[in-house]
Amino acid sequence: MCGIVGYCGPKAAAPVLLEGLKRLEYRGYDSAGLSVCVDSKVEIFKRAGKIHDLREVVPEDLPGTHGVGHTRWATHGEVTDKNAHPHVSADRNIAVVHNGIIENFSSLRSRLTEEGYVFESDTDSEVIAHLIQKFYQGDLERAVKQALGLLKGTYGVVCMHAGEPGVLVGARHGSPLLLGVGDNEMFLASDVTAVLAHTKQVIHLEDGEVVRVTAADYTATDLRDRKIEKEVETIGWELEEIEKNGYEHYMEKEIFEQPDSIFRAMQGRIDQENATGHLGGLNMSRGELLDVQRVRIIAAGTSYYAGMVGAYVLENMARVPAQAELASEIRYRNPIVERNTVYFAVSQSGETADTLSALRELQRKGARVLGICNVVGSSIPRESDGGVYIHSGPEIAVASTKAFTSQLTAFYLFTLLIARMRDMSLEAGVSFTKELARVPDTVREVLSRADEVRRVAERYYQARNFLFLGRGINYPVALEGALKLKEISYVHAEGYSAAEIKHGPIALINEETPSLFIVPDDGLRDKVISNMKEVKARRGPVIALGVDGDNELADIADDVLFVPKTDELLYPYLMVVPLQLFAYYAALKLGRNVDQPRNLAKSVTVE
Ligand code: F6R
View 1: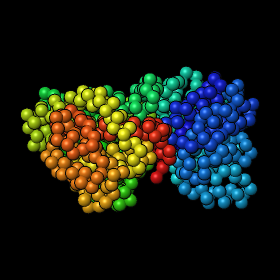
View 2: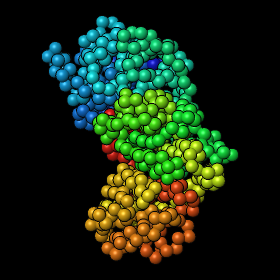
View 3: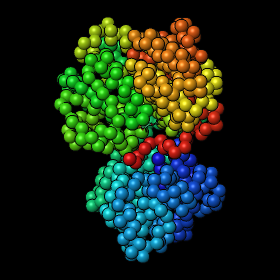
View 4: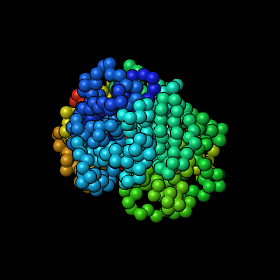
């Protein structure tokens, strides 16, 4: 969603801000802007459209060494130049960039309008600039705090004042903000990717914290002026990880990175000798693990589908009742929190508003919530009671790929851990861990067949409707395959349990609606084959995604893709990769913006 970058230091601010905004592009946005303080004047440049549109209106030699920049993903007000950030106060001395939603903006706007403030935009954010002006008496930080005290909703905000050159004030409440500490230069950003080219030293702000920043120094306080000591953390990501490194798109790079990212997620966490998982961050004693009687998983989108696979594996291998639920639903459902239940909040970004709110609601009710997250230092891992970092490295493409397979890894490891404390024998554990450890190699083998997937995708890319069908543990994989296709190619796709089509969706089948069936060699294979025949009998084109050596598939399906053989419970890893590739190649052929599909944002920090 929206992105923020702020800079103060010795360099010209505009190029630093433009570069930071470019790094934030991946989050999804529809307009961009920046403001730099030049000769005690706040200069504003903003444009609906892309960063290159903004670049065209920013003078190349713009002086000024402190400023703020923003990428906007519209919530209140259309995508126009005037609604882009930064927003300025009526006296044009204050510039503000804001992420989040101000829920009481309309009453604040009416009050300010009555007091004579003239609004230039339709956004909720503009009220912040006018409120700061209202309270300003020579101290930006003070005025910002007074203004924030009146806001209801969420914000990550950065402000500057023409009369205080070299000073930025940032604050956070429900929308991420971090401080990048450089060598006599400082950055404020909503996302570490915006500062990684300059520094790896960062300070994550917590909700309710305000930071006043100059090139050489910073002070963190709360809204009541109490000083807060902050710890500087070193980011483990490398700059190369946020570059395309020769790939055409981030999505392609991230799909092909999966052998490595899965390996990183399992590295040091498989205890081969005892055939169990080793997860240091759970903060649970052996006794507490033994007492777990139920697992509930909360997440959104792709992370939710990974959670569905996780629930299946937990029930099947560890015989622990487990269920995945949409975070957006559970948070308003007044959930019943039972004893000996462990909750997992699964999120690549660690910032998804629905998942974070569900976590908080569950914790309020006394639940133990563990996080399964990628972005280190993000809100969910910071607020959870323990958990697992999946170490996928930065996921830049909006469509999630490598995070999914690493989230699976976290679930397999947790399952192994508690299954081995229960009924799973050493022998069964040894055989499973061996196969699990082989997954990076088998995924590499699947990726080596990418051209076959490309060929099939290029044959079907013009279809306007698609069905993805799977059963059992591969049912969530079918859902994920449909999600990938629809979000990046804008082709309507539905994921269904193959068994369910006869209860309705089979009515959609005709010569123009292809169905992709996931057909592993498990106990449900023959049932899925019957479902395939039902579709074929109605002249529906069929693509089968099966296992090496399953020669019968070619007799039924129009096209067949194969993956290598593995343990029945591990097929989600191997089946999802061709589906990611299928969506990628179809979207390419359709000429879509693969990395930044329309209307979507990378981390959904608003409800
Ligand atoms: C799909 C996708 C989204 C996210 C969802 C949750 O490709 O990217 O569906 O999976 O918004 O995001 P996280 O995992 O960051 O909580």
